[in-house]
Image (tube, rainbow, N blue to C red; front, top):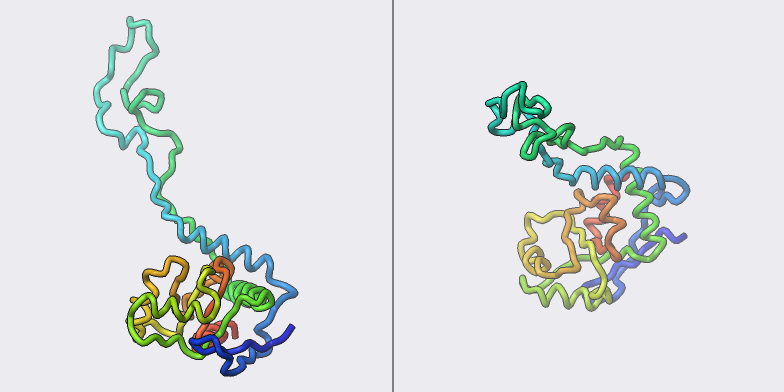
Length: 211
């Protein structure tokens, strides 16, 4: 496969060529690494806040419901027993973390494999800059239209967000686009979106993470 990508401007015209450094493309291994990275990411997003009360935590039930003998019923010491309606729960869920650890080398391999597959599929687009004249949504939408990806789901990666107030405002109302700093792009997002749109500087920063 070719290790070069076209660099486009905001009007969709080719203005240069981006050469992918040696060692970034990886297509022979990494499938399991991608799986592990995605599973870990989705597990980390789980809240883990489900909680039930045991019989010791349910309010009430301090008095013995009825006398021990002579009632013809099974003896009961508390109305908060798990076998009673309104009682506690046995072995119910408690707050926990679902986070899974992924080694750094495995994560780097997963990023390489995911990016390589998207490059092969022709879904990675590089622009020299994503410049818009104002903070209006239609300005950002016009750029996507020029790049012929307006109808796709798009991950737009830029080097930094601190000085991109206009871009943040302009893309905030685009339902099919997510804006990410290149340092925060993960394996799940590389696979989730139908098009990956990087500025040249953002792709440089992302590739540095793969060293």
